[in-house]
Length: 265
Image: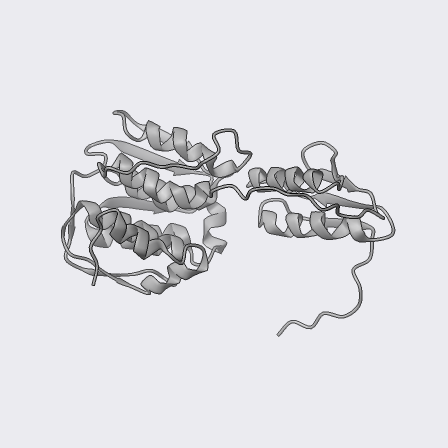
């Protein structure tokens, strides 16, 4: 149970930068509306900084200022007011990442409507997915884009004979599931070779996945979508438990999956 009382006061807010950028984003939206000035001080380096950049960009579009002061602090003047502004909501690179992975695994998928100049941190899926299409050992630092680990891991799992290291991933243990553990369990159950470490994954690619098993989505939308992409390279059908978890972020995922040629019962 959580009980909250009273109004949010202006002032200095100190919090870690490596737990969730959503805490910082929430403060950046709320603090400008207070009477006094405020400061946000980060006690650890900021991770998922792209999401904070997106927040600052939106604030500016709606007439609100929040001023970065170095890499670990923000000054937010009080007494501000949001101004109306018309804008189009960009397509989401975080969700598109699964289709990038599917395309990297050989599916004929064309992605449209993504802003190539977006400040979204997950736009790096374009470069990271391309790096997994070539030979040789690849190391990907995901400290600024942790949501990309499931699609990157499934693509890495099917690079025959090639090693991929996904590093800077400790925060994945605090997502909807322990995603380092969930990714490892699901992909290995399907026939891949993934080694889990405290803050990283080492993946030795295989040619195909055996499938023919039931895997658990861990009630995590990104794990369910990862498993769906993996089945495009599985020799036998796969049962995904908790497939409805995709509703959190991509309610039409299964319809799009079917429209693009996927089959499910």
